[in-house]
Image 1 (cartoon, rainbow, N blue to C red):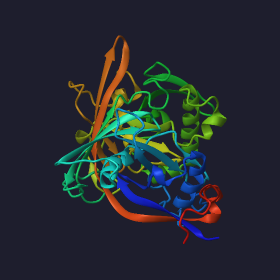
Image 2 (cartoon, rainbow, N blue to C red):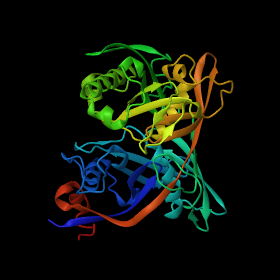
Image 3 (cartoon, one colour):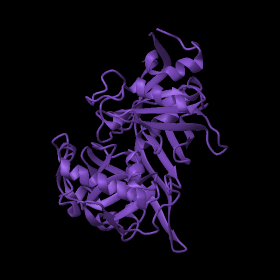
Image 4 (cartoon, rainbow, N blue to C red):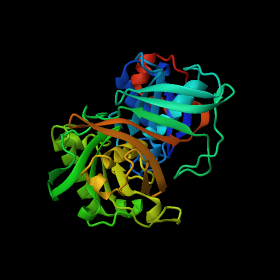
Length: 398
C-alpha cells in the first residue's frame, strides 16, 4: 500500500523533541490517533531505536503534541501531549510534558493560531491532559517567536531565547489533590520490597519520591548505571506501581502497570559533589538538592520539567522526603537548584499552607525552544487502517 502524509512540525522544547500536529489535521475521533502517532514515531520497536520513524529511542524524544484553538475562555490554545512508548504499541495521554510546553506558545504564534504583536508575547496554554493553565512568555522577532538568545539550559548544546513558563495552581494535575493521600510522607508497603518511607506529591505531574539511601544508593548514580541495574529497576517499578494504587491513580497493580508515565518515580539525596554526563563536576555548595527520575521504564538524562516543578513543590512541604534532603533556607520563596545528570536546574515554587492545608500557588522556570523543520510526516497506509477508512482517501498519498 501507499504512504499517507500528514502536515507536521518537528520541534525542540527544552530537553525534548516532538512531532507537533494541528488538531484540525487529525481525525475528530481521538480513538484513531494512537495508530497515527505510533506509525509516525516508529513504535513499537523491539530494537529500541525507532529508526523507521521520527522517535529517537528514548522517552524524551518519543513524543507528539497536538495544538488547536482553546476550548476554555481563560486560555488561548489547547495543547494535548502524547507520550509514545518505544518498545510497546502504547500511547499515554495521562501526563503533560513541561519541556514541550515551552514550544507550544511559539508554535501557536508562528502558525497563526494565536495573534501576537510587539516585543513580547504571552500565550495562555490549556493543557488538556492535566486541565491546567500554563502561561508562556517569550520575545518576538518581528512577527515570529525569537530563537536566538543567551539562555543555556542543561542537556542542550548552545543557547537560545528564553521562554518563561508559569504553571498556575499546579497541584492535583493527575489526581485532583496536591497530596493524594493527605500526608507529606507515607510508609508504603511495596510487594517484594518491604516498607519504605515515601512522599507522594501531585504538582504538574504525580510523582513518588524515595530517599536514595533507602535504596542503597548514593543518589549521584548515572542513568546508564541505574538502567543496567536490573534489581534496582525492578524495585523502582514496584514502588511506582504501589504508589499508583496508593495515590488513587490506579485501582490495582495490574492497572498501574498499563500506565507507563504517571506516577513518575524518583530518588533524592542531599547536595553533594557529582560528575555530569559531560564529564564536568558540580560542587555541593552550588546546589540545594540531588535528584534522579524515571518514567516509561527509563532514567532521565535531564529531569522532566513538570517533575522538576513537582520536586520543587515537594521541597517546600515541611517534613516531606524531598524537604528533608533539601538545603535549608531562610527564604521560602528562593529558587531551588536541583542537580541532575545533565547539570543544574533552577525552579521557583510558591507553596503556602492555608487553614492547615498545603497549596501550590505557582511554579516557574525558563526553557528554550526551536522549530527544527516543517512539512509532512509520512506513515504507511497499512499501519493506519482507521485513518484510511475515516478519510476515504482524502489524505494525500505519496
